Image (cartoon, rainbow, N blue to C red; front, top):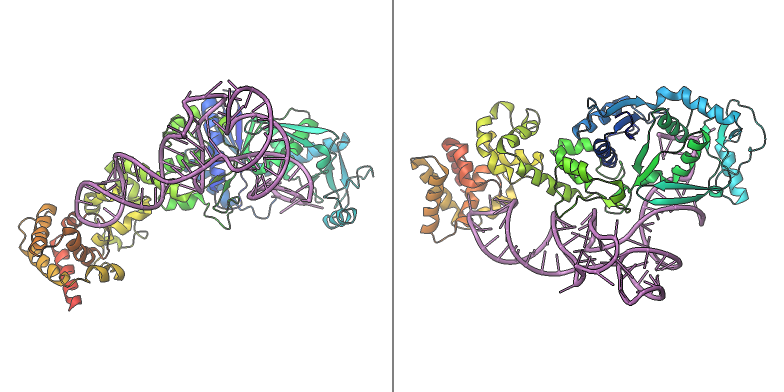
Length: 470
RNA sequence: GCUCCCAUCGUCUAGUGGCCUAGGACACCACCCUCUCAAGGUGGCGGCACGGGUUCGAAUCCCGUUGGGAGUGCCA
């Protein structure tokens, strides 16, 4: 394994874990697994005011949730970019000593001013030959050589950059701290990274980094720039505008397997006509060369569809276990002491085919654990608008009272009799009963719901409904 | 503005010169099933951005146009 490829995932801890980052991590992980390589996690915390330590744990937790676990033999890290600051500065000074970098005392404002007056973009190389020594406030800039830089990218193919279009970029800030481009390259060299698989937004950086790799005496790793994830406006997913936090999806009851599966189908597809496939098949089939070149819309609706399918694939027992977090005290919308696991168990199978995310579960069963379920007024009005509604409720209450066996089939038979005597359809008459008992116009099958709820509560609610109608 | 990337149904994709009158999935519509809602089943709608080439033959190769996107920091 020591000779296998070394992939890396290098997020910066600046907020909740982004689904785009999750996909990139997953791409790296799938490749690592298939090729018997190593997945290196490096936290890029380089001296940035937005970095917060708690986000680092968030990244680790989110990766673990996706199946990329710290304890796995092919997982390495986390490393912290800040720990290598000395090496970054050393590398920079080596470039300075070799004349491949030079100091410049222009402030950002001055650089901009010169650009404006010269009519050209960016830094113009003002200090290239001024022979400035290191000093406070002076930045170290890389002396971009003449010529052309050709990036060989596994996804894009060959991408050419004319070096004349690349300005002498900053390696060390005025305060002496290393910048991303440099730190990133030095870290990758230290960690012997062989494959850099990252989002397309880094492609414009790549010629700079490749020059750095070469200037530092190594040959560049294999690059692969995967397309970004976009919103409905076709803009890159952003933390501010879009719902991108993996943590949030987890809380709502998206299953990790469906999130992983869905994310992998953005920009890529398994062979054959099925998109829902086990992770192992993804590992077996995923190849960077097959990744699409265009941005992919992160479609929550399709994610939900995947999730619904994953939920339905579970055994009832698995489903019941998976529901625990959303039924937990403090989370569920009923008093903790009212919850009855047996009742939930009895309803679980009927709920399972009716939800797309686990967070949908409580509203399907809350009527079982609430003394008086809140009534959906719109549903109520609609359900009782017909003149027969009151009578049906009264008769059903009577039938419930006299019913010998409190089972779904008996209850159904009872309502059927009432329905037929009035020349109605069960589809009609079930409505007032449903709203009266559950508070909602839709939900799990009615008679099973009544059976599980029990005779007393059912009767009480039917009587309340009748009273309400006056 | 400049640099770079991209372009198959509304969306995600299959497709690597003939198997394509372009396949699947999500969404949507209809029907079936049905105590509501789902689930399930069946069917339908719907696409190769445009214009030139190359070729016996192009969604697939080349060029251009148009349209999108990303980058352009002493952020990462």
